[in-house]
Image 1 (cartoon, rainbow, N blue to C red):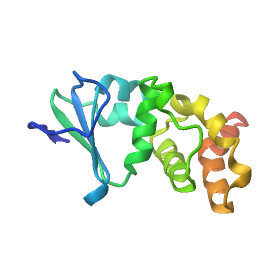
Image 2 (image 1 turned 120 degrees about the vertical axis):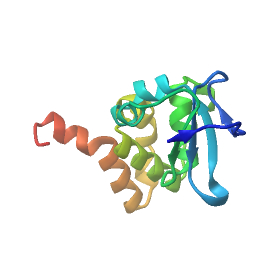
Image 3 (image 1 turned 90 degrees about the vertical axis):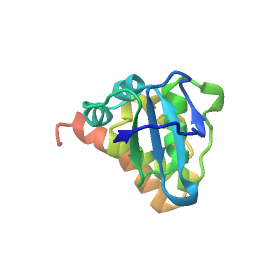
Image 4 (image 1 turned 60 degrees about the vertical axis):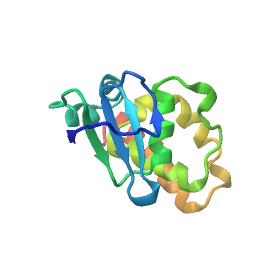
Length: 146
């Protein structure tokens, strides 16, 4: 993370947000203004990443897909009307990966049920990725296997 100096944000989730998150790279990069407290509440991984956070800092997530992060933020900020009911295979896999890497299962649990309901019409790769990320680890954890 580095100091934020007058960055133009593409997606403002918190007008008075104290954190700029740069997601993606190159021409797909998007910049989000958020409240660090919302990210801390959403994920223990983000809480750890932001432990040394000071006002006006920037967090970079170059390996993540901006659309997936935007959807996660729409859920975190209770923007229900903006949360898509159906996701493309690519976006569903991206959200599944984001969910897995940052432990967003609790945050996304209500949406996961809706998104998972569309799995029967997906490619096998999409079904496997989404099923494991959204459900597999939780099932194994509940059974005491991880």
